[in-house]
Length: 382
Image (cartoon, rainbow, N blue to C red; front, side):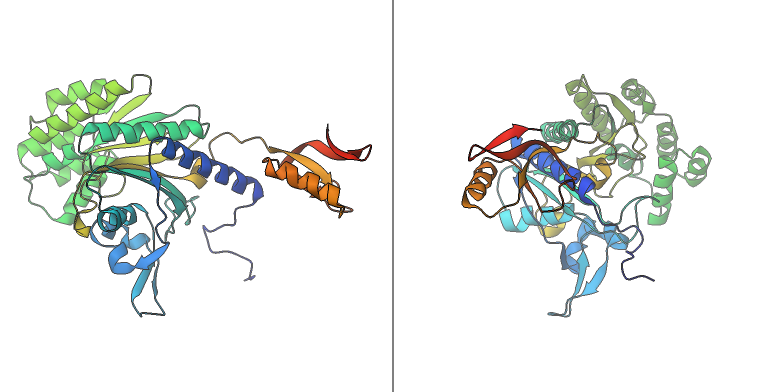
């Protein structure tokens, strides 16, 4: 095999796409900063017993493992950044009040999430710690939507659910973890016959409620129907109230509901959401509430957030125009160098054309040219 051939689902990012990814990264971080989120940069690798502690165990199969040559301890490449940010909130910051954090960086997966997915997503996310009310859920959701708007994604639909509904229906059911996983899988794919078989020995209320969930998807009217057909359990009523309240706060957003949808990481504990857009084979971003995420680090407190893969996002959002630039001749004279330096200090992109390569500017739209007129260097339109 040729030395330059990369592993499956790993690829170089070439200039045009890299430029778009970097511009998106900056726009997303700027939007998070507008909301008051502070940037953190967790390490790409850390000790495995920290990386996969608690809720991180769900990522075990997605995590590359290696041995630290300094300590001999097992280490892992992060497959998701949320557990790391929870560790930062719990141990390094340890603030008493609300903490808003954001991040942007590569994660690495042992297997691709889909046939055409990369194993090296470029993950952006934002999380808020310390507030249990729905105000935090709404803020994170609004930030997520503003991030998509900043990426110039014109249309999208927000799908809402709440894991407390299924959890409440299964609370009194005594079955193995394997059976519970099969129930969750049947709910996700709307497998009525499979779910009926799996729940045949469940208490009647749980069984009927789970089967009813298979039909509870669609627009906001689903919530009213759920009030009628689901058991009147406190957790179910609280979840439906939360979804209804959020829907009222987003009157101009296209919303859908799927009360059986449990897709996403296992650490969600309340409202969860996914955003879909035309042309995307899967959700552009996912998020929700995960109040248990910091418990294993000794600090269980409210948490809600979202994340997305910028490499995935760049495939569906509109392409961006090339950045305007100035073409300048290559030269060694002091006055030319001073003129170029002055333009660059003003934030201009100046591309010096090397001798014999006058037509080789690719990733910049040179709309002006630096020319010498009557002994002075001046800008002229091209």
